[in-house]
Image (cartoon, rainbow, N blue to C red; front, side, top):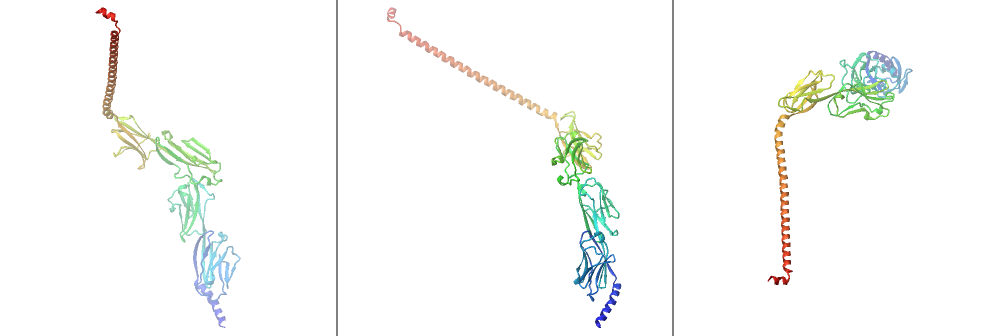
Length: 466
């Protein structure tokens, strides 16, 4: 009898408790494909286990738990399960299903409590192509039924996207981000969208094929007779580019619209992506353009080569006239530039009005003079010209050199005379010795003949003589 009264009491009090308690509302943000748990925990002990726990989606029953049994409703299209019903944790776990049919309102009716959960699924839809080219236009769009909560976008460098960015535009209550004139260095990488309410982070990778280290319109500053290497290297390995994007590729190098190199890249060689100019001359200045043919369009990069040279109207400084130094720069636009001449630590002499791209200055002293090209307060290029003080140098050096030459000549002449004298003296002595020997030989011969004459005189002749 007591049991019957208790059941009657519960059956009366329970609906009343539901009406008095009302319902709690939770908002859950999740990404498509993510496992989601909708909370439903009951703190009071279960009085009557025969009363079922019911989950509904948009007022339609999807799952029922009663006396340890889990029953699924006819509208169930996803894999549902309860977290831990033995411990009165009836939280609903959603693992998969038709994601477009999962958003919306869920209610959990459990032992006098009603808990309502609003599930919002978010995703970022990007371009269909795996790779984009520099200069393309693309957009990232946030897909969700919820238009009330605030969202924030962040670029690959973690900077927040605002309306101040010219190339990045927010549309449709910040649900759509349009990116114009794609740049590999700025737009390549992971873009992130953050849902302000739950701080849910949704990411999308953007792959942009472009050039390494520099953008279109790059300017290089070089001096005459120096070496420069112009690069057309891509930010991605050429062999990894999908064939549907790169079809029958052609590489072309031009200088001031004149074709220098044009090759087929089917037999790829990385050296083709660089152009080396040895001993740069003034005529090398101008617009150098590299172009690679892709399926949709060409990807091109332009480099402006600015060349500097210095000259003088005479090689040396004269005592009567100064040396006029001229600095020449081949630049198409020098409106924000200036040329400066200075010697060592002296203050520079600059000129901003450069209609002919040169600045001449009279050097009044010898030494090292430097010409600098300054663009927006930054020195881009400089060259050194050495001015020699010719007159003084020649005056100081000519007489000693003359004296040295005369002295050397005199010494050489003396050596020659001494040599001749020595040779003559030796010759005279040799002749004297030879004459002396010949005289002695004649004397000896004469004496010998005299002796022989005395020896052979006849005796009768001697007697006769007596």
